[in-house]
Image (tube, rainbow, N blue to C red):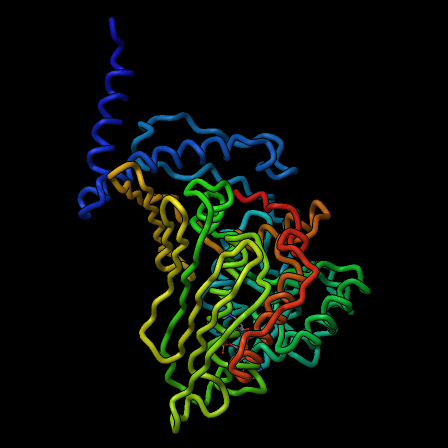
Length: 439
Ligand code: NAD
């Protein structure tokens, strides 16, 4: 006698293999089912792992299961720390990123909370403070910033200013005894990055660069599949990040404030994510750079950079970034027996992970349907976790310095028109802290 379960499973397996044939959208959607089920199981296991439960939450809530494993599930029940035990953040700079992403994300954090603001525009800060319930006493100007030293509610300073201001506000913040979370790019030169690392070490505070992609579930999943060699050896990576700009007066188009154009702003995602996914450091770069003559947007900073990176394993990555092309953010990792493709790879949400695997005469394509999570909340909660548990951040200052070293080599190569060797004693692992416990 056969029970219903094995019969259903066998049928499902047969059904999926047929539908997975390299294929139309209909087949691809069917293919996603198996993967969603697998990822739900993974999520459930993840939710139950004791390591993922904040140390301070002794008794997490577990709800009764009621959906089939083939239907999309929600994530685990949030287990936030009580407000008085969360890490307090002061956010410096109230521009697009802070107002549109970071401040709202703090509302969905489990271990982090907003406690102070720093801005050069008092009227704007007053409005924002009212919206987020921040007392006037916890609002600072760039001049009174150093007084954060006396504010016991503030544990972390999150620097969200134009790139060339990151160093000054990191050094002053560390001197005030606060841990520093700094937006990317870390600074505008490797000398500045080194100064920031030294200042934080001297003050015995932690320094993390806000590489949100390294905390984003789809990008982490892709990296896991690559590093487990699920598709065989990696052979080649193709990555690009493009967007169009409109305002030549914006700081992003001023060399002194931005440090460069498309490369440090959006090309950096291709560089950093490729290194993250491969777990390897490039040994050589070869670049080409272009700016349309006479375009006022590109009087001071470059419009596009295209570059190749060669790794010791033999992998070559081909990357490109453009400040004057319609938005497109994607990478693909080509392997011996398949490929992994991430569309909307560097966007704030909507990552779309597709894989293809050779199976005899067939190509099995899958869409890996992971639950969407707020990348900024994951990133900030990871930093808070490092402070609570006294751990090295997964993306410390050394990770930002390495990108700066590589960007300088890319510019040098574009200028000289020849490959530039990157003499590096560091491994990708040495540039990271322990794997983050994300929930
Ligand atoms: P923005 O122009 O929207 O905001 C910058 C803020 O800095 C404004 O509030 C502005 O008033 C203030 N400021 C102080 N001094 C200034 C000066 N001299 N010139 C211009 N502005 C000055 O920029 P943004 O998009 O919020 O970017 C801020 C930082 O965040 C940058 O380092 C950027 O690279 C980074 N960023 C990261 C991401 C990400 O996804 N992690 C996304 C966007 C921006």
